Amino acid sequence: MSKPASVLFVCLGNICRSPTAEGVFRKLVEQAGLQDRVHIDSCGTSNWHIGKGPDLRSQEAAVKRGVDISMLKARQFTEKDLDTFDYVVVMDRQNLADVKDIWHQNGGTQPTLFLEYGRSSLAEVPDPYFGGEDGFEEVLDLIEEAGEGLLVDIKERFA
Image 1: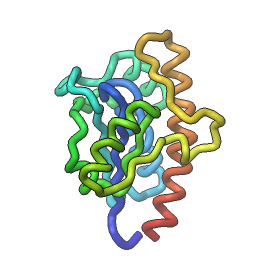
Image 2: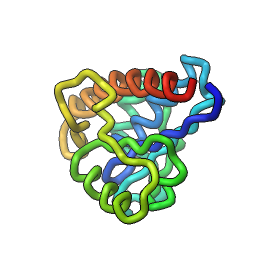
Image 3: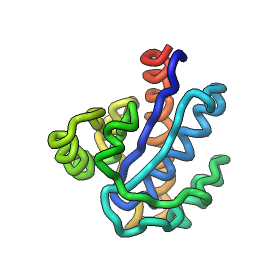
Image 4: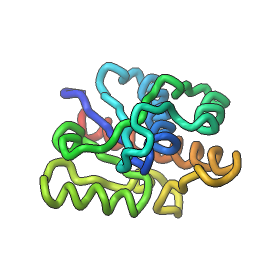
């Protein structure tokens, strides 16, 4: 890879899906030996949880798969993120619409839905916040699979 790539994962509160994606993708990048070549971050479109760690259920589900996200802290998406990151990858259509509103006003990296990089028939990573443990497992499955596709895209684009 010639220049480092940068990826930002975005959900609503930055306590379930996007920190899980950050942690899982970091593990995929490390397994590929590219940890020095890919910068990874996550954020939320809302300001509800700024400075808080990921939901404990997200942390517990991730740890079962060898991913520690306990050190992550929620932050809110800013227009500057569109100029900073090569990939702005959003978990669902509503948050994509919110980020695209900012993108239309300011330009920068065009945001995309994360699952576009995967093979799932789903368009969105469902928010597990109000559901049971199965929802967190489903989120991990979707994120792992789409993360592999995103890594392939990065390798091709930044080769």
